[in-house]
Amino acid sequence: MIKRVPFFLLLLLAIPVSAQDKKPTTLREVLLAELKSTHGAEEWFVPANIAVKGLTAEQASWTDGKGNHSVGQLAYHLVFWNRRNLQVLKAEKPETFSGDNDETFDKFDSKKWNEIVAQLDDVMNELEKWVETADEAKLKQSAQVFTHISTHNAYHIGQIIYVRKEQGSWDPKNGVR
Image 1 (cartoon, rainbow, N blue to C red):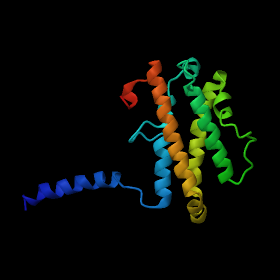
Image 2 (image 1 turned 30 degrees about the horizontal axis):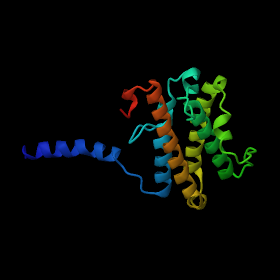
Image 3 (image 1 turned 120 degrees about the vertical axis):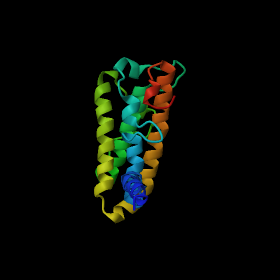
Image 4 (image 1 turned 180 degrees about the vertical axis):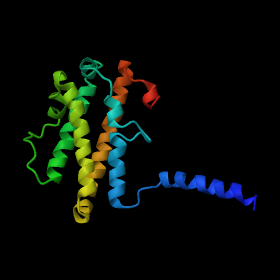
């Protein structure tokens, strides 16, 4: 009997650990996990909220002088496309857009940097909320849109980290060394 006690204690300790490591199994859970991993969940890579955290407007405007985008331009671009996709998902009329993707970077205004950071967080929260509340048919119909959103976000978040590393404003304690 005494030999069994440590085994049962170990088993009891393992239950909460296995419950925390629950993998997404439904389409809704998978899409939500993808969105959260590019928004605020610190998992395999740095999420958007961490990537833009702590930057001043001046730092967000910095470019390398070689024609590459600033962090602010990249964040503005993410806000634009995430918001536009959300409008389409909600069956709302999207903002007027000329079709020139350069505009989605070039309209960044450093005076509105803090507002852009807040808008990025807000639109990501709204996308997550949409996935949480959409009926199953809409979710299935829109699944590929969300995989593209998540991939697009991850790509540009990587660029943001790269720009910050070049600039010297990235703290490796935040991820990616």
